[in-house]
Image 1 (cartoon, rainbow over the protein chains, first blue to last red):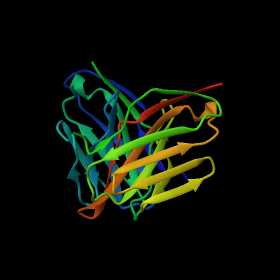
Image 2 (cartoon, rainbow over the protein chains, first blue to last red):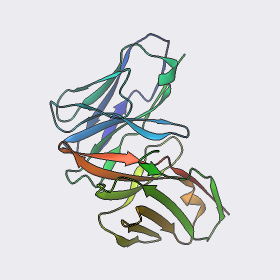
Image 3 (cartoon, rainbow over the protein chains, first blue to last red):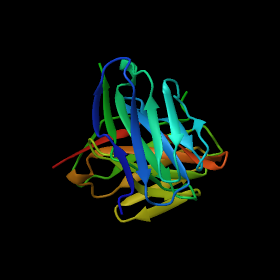
Image 4 (cartoon, chains in turn yellow, cyan):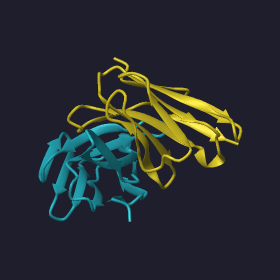
Length: 112
Length: 113
């Protein structure tokens, strides 16, 4: 049971480049999330998807887009990367009752 | 003011000490209260969750929720060097069909031998 899998684990981008972070879960969860984690800021919600076909903005959505491709997959896209988007990104999914959040291992992104 | 406040520490204790980690929150609609542990360069992993006010115990860990004071705590008994990690509190509320978890900034704990 892989849980939540996200790729890539490490990426270096130049300012203005685009990239997509991929995430997949095999627990049949409806809700999926993308967070970023920065020193001193904790985990901040970028976007979430309550179910297949729906997405909503979180606390810090600017500069990002998401796609809920199917129930398993939820991708995060940076259209034009900026140094302020240098961060660790975590994909997560929750059980139907909302009491347990499962995280991926993280994606370390550096924008130079 | 953030919805969830947590002292970032670091908190340094000797092995065997009782550790107390705390969070306060402002949103009275929060329904689930969770504690996560995060080791360096890893994703957070769930330690415990509670739904109501009171205590919940799991081995060396006790989670406590006081809804009237909007205050939650995690106690670690007989702390071990392997407990050294960042501890994040999290709270969730049902919004638009999905539980939206909100996290504290995390407290860095160091248990030295």
